[in-house]
Amino acid sequence: MIKKIFINSQNRIRLLYKFPVMLVVSYLLSFYFGYLLIYNLQFFFSERSGVSFDFDYVSSSIGDMKVEQITWELAFIAVVFLFAKYIDRFSYKDLGIYFNKTAVSRLLTGIVAAAFFIVLPFLINLLLGTIEIEGFYWNVNISGKSIIIIFIYETILLMLVAFQEELFNRGYLLNCLSKIKLVFAIIISSVLFSLLHILGADWENNPTGSLIGVLNILLIGVIYSYYFIHTKDLWLIMGAHFSWNLIQGPVLGLPISGDPGKGLLVTRVIQDNLLTGGNFGLEGGLLVTASLVAMFIALHFYVTRIKSGVKSGDGSPNQKIRGTFS
Image (cartoon, rainbow, N blue to C red; front, side, top):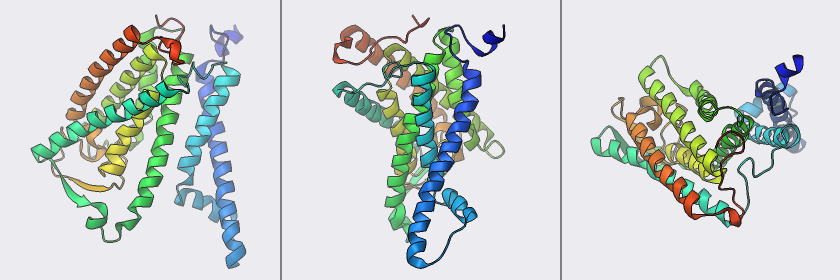
């Protein structure tokens, strides 16, 4: 009886108990490696400047230099792989990871497709006059030459975020839930994915945009889950996730799920309404909702073409996830 509380029908530890452990281990690894990195940097400069740095200074520097963002993503990716391999016995292909030219083509397909579906509502807003482009960042901001460094950092970070979130929410989580009904697996994965973005919402000043934004992210989770379940491919949705965020933030200069940032362009929201999403970003607008519906339709036809015309002889999975998803 006690065993059933902790072990599921697949003879694996229940996700309810694994997830908190994964978070704690990831946090400890993140802080440990972040501390080591900052400490060694400080030690390098202290040797040359003669100024010593105490623990509190090093610890605060981890946050000031945004090192914790990079180390957290790397740590959580490592923990997911460790749990997948040694606890759950999932292979790389179970997680949707394979290495061949098909992986490259699908990654690029995801990047291009997501760029189209997020630029489309942006252009419509431009035509309607609800937002405007003030110019390039370095022209609008006199001291904005550092935007290139910020752009490189944000690009690297968003690549890691896309890989981490898709690896966990689709590759790992959907495999863990493969014995329950398909609709419940998609709901659980998508709701958790949406909750990861809820902290950026401004519920007090922008409740409508925040609600639409959270629901749009939930819809994105459903779309990505649908694709993964039918193809066992992580590359396309990882590319789409990365491109979707990159275009909004580092390129257009708009908030990503409520998280403000700097971009190559300086874009100003003129009308905070149901189309622009306000301070939540484009994802908080109904134009993105319509764009996501169009994305799902396009993805459905893409999946149908894959299943009918492309076999798995090239090393890519191209099959439904194992379990009751059939």
